[in-house]
Length: 200
Image (cartoon, rainbow, N blue to C red; front, side):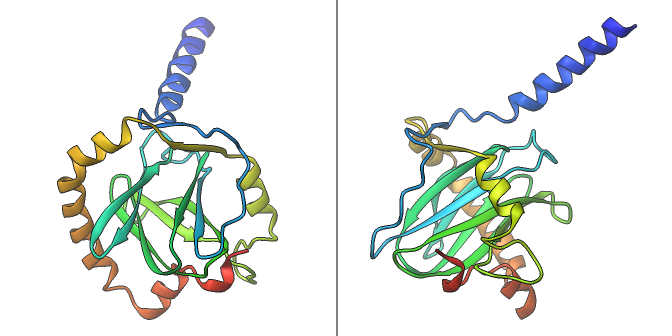
């Protein structure tokens, strides 16, 4: 009986771990996050929770209503995305889509923890604050654990073709879920918006 239970446990672990890999991503050439250049911005998306760990999570920047692929984010990993300063919208998609508006200052690096969202079945990209009395900020132990406990990955050579093949479907998903997000009240939107002072 113990042998059967052990075999089942190994199978379950294997299934979970197989969900943690992405055919579109590879290990980054370095695990160091270099400072942002003036006139540019870096946003680091981290995912650490094992809840819904077998479900994939795609990350995008939305530019004038068009999706730009950032990467796929398996649990236990992080992605560094470089973009321009200013007002932004980022989208994550698992079983549902969710959003993080942002107002980013040049030369800074920002951090977001991508959390499972039980309400939607998707993942909520949540800003790490520069300072906060109500949630994790850049000085908190949670943030330090997320940063050190995740591996830096980047899109590989398969990513452009995958995105081109799936863009039309993903654009429809964006349109559907963005209309829902826009119906949130001002406080709900503020809680999800990354602000200039959140960078370092």
